[in-house]
Each structure stands twice: as C-alpha cells, then as structure tokens.
Image (tube, rainbow, N blue to C red):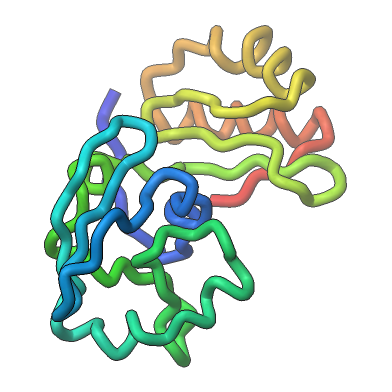
Length: 163
C-alpha cells in the first residue's frame, strides 16, 4: 500500500472538541501558558506564535465552539482554522493524523470517519456492521481502488462520503 500524501485543508475538525482534553493550567504572561492534557496528565509549555497573537486575542470562536482547544482560532476572511501555538504545540497534536473521509448518515449527520490507515471510527452500529462485513475484508492493495469500492458500498447503504 502506498501511503497517501496528506494536505491539511484547515477545516478545524481536529480541534473543535479538544477543550475537553487541553486545558490551560497556568498563564505566565507574554502569551506563554502551561497546557495540561487531561487524558495523559502531561503538561506542555506553549507560547502563542508571534504572528498569531492578535488572532489569539479574539475569543469569539468559543461562542460557536465552546469546547474547542483554547488555542484554536478561525482566520478572519478565509474561515481557515489555525493553531495559535503551532510552533510549540503538544506532541499529541504533532502526531495527529487527519481523517481521509467523513461519512454522513441519511440526515447529513456525521456517522463516522476513516483515518488514513483504513481505520473506521464510529459509534453507528449499522455503519460498523457494514464496515466489518463488506469493507474491512476488502484487501485491495491500491488505495484509490479500495476507497472507490468503499464509497460505493456506503452510498448503496444510504450514507454519503465527504473527502
């Protein structure tokens, strides 16, 4: 299997609920903080990137996404998502693998995600059954052919897929 190249679309999906995970433990001043990971117990010193300090000061993102990472912001005008501590971000953020596909149910709600490693993340029982019975057993070595077959299977079952 040839790994697919990843290019971030800056959608922000990865950070919108990280406020449950990342909390500011201490504020040192001068845009420096101690960030605590509630899952691992790790503390990471971070500093807001100098070119993103004005963006960091705008806290309006929390009106729409109250549980977002404390350092996540939308760039005005473009709507692109940005990490304001990108240079000093925690290791867990550096290691993050984005989703290659989002799976939506018949009502357009998020039903699952597929990681680049062909791994399904979902709580939808029907989607998990379809995955186990029809998709996970497909050993197609070519990623594009595998993906095309997987999308056809999901669409036949009433799901839609967003790339």
